[in-house]
Amino acid sequence: MIAWQDILISLVKIIIIFGSLIQVGALMTLAERKFSAWMQYRIGPNRVGPWGLLQPLADGVKFIFKESLMPEGANRMLFRWAPLLAALPAFLTIAAIPFSNDIVIGGHNFGRLAIAELDIGVLYILSIAGLSVYGVILGGWASNSKFSLMGGLRASAQMISYELTLILTILAVVALSGTLNLGEISDAQRTIGNWHIWSQPLGFMLFVVAMFAETNRHPFDFAECEAELVAGFHTEYSGMKFALFFLGEYSAMTVISCLATVLFLGGPSVPFWPAAPWFVGLGAFLAKTSIFLFLFIWVRWTLPRFRFDQLMSIGWKVMLPLALANLALTGVFVSMGWDLWAAIGRLF
Image 1 (cartoon, rainbow, N blue to C red):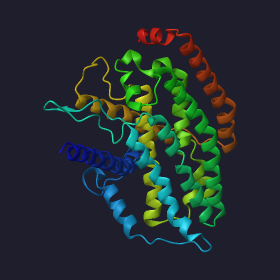
Image 2 (cartoon, rainbow, N blue to C red):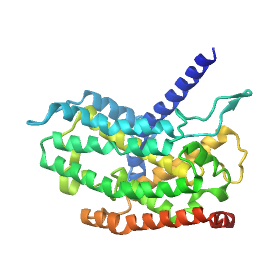
Image 3 (tube, rainbow, N blue to C red):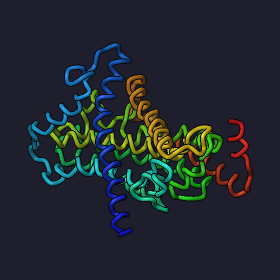
Image 4 (cartoon, one colour):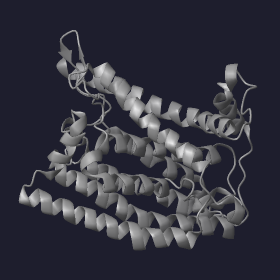
């Protein structure tokens, strides 16, 4: 009977987390258009439903019935599989994210709101998240289009350069926490003074910049630079295949925002309320994640796009050396047992 209860609890968590991720991916398309309209003094979507809230549903119906084209000379199998390969990693990595502390209802402990509590959660996310670029590369190559191929090559180049910075900043947090378990990393930041954003300010800034390049977002969206490549790697796609690329992008934005919350902002911890109930912690987690999602939109409609050579130069000549120095310095302090990080935390 206990086994069936565990299976049922796991199924409920899977439905909640995966269902929410799909909904966030859809609602982010509306939020992007609404916020951009607000920033540029435009109206934005307002025709479908109150305040345009049903616009994502209308877009989904349109994609379902839109004709799916196959370019002449394209590799049919890879052309069909590429959108799925681009979207699937985000749905796999979300499984290791702990969205709350232990859920206690009626005296029963249902564990964290997480699909899988892995002791190697950090390694799992890093290994799976890097696979999304294969969908972009294969989609560009299989389309038999020079613009699409160039977009795929750009995506692979910037992923290699910024993935290194991203990994090194995460390793600095792992060194401080002494664990690869995301739940334990979150637990180590129960009070606001212990948040890793205070002990890793440089690592946090590098992580934020790298996550824009990792998700192909403006000002680093060279894989789909409209001014140069028409639409980049997905130029030849239409219908639901095109929608899957966008779903994968917004889902990846959501996952990496959740990861930033866990690594640097204490996960579900509530500032100045360490013993907050689990549902308050869940609300705090979602609020912190929403800040990063808004940052994605804000930056896109504020900053101009870099040149590709500038992107690569910043990645290899500036961010990578800084990430290496930050990790080395963190390793020295941890190995020496110095309490500088705690002293910095107490200042705040």
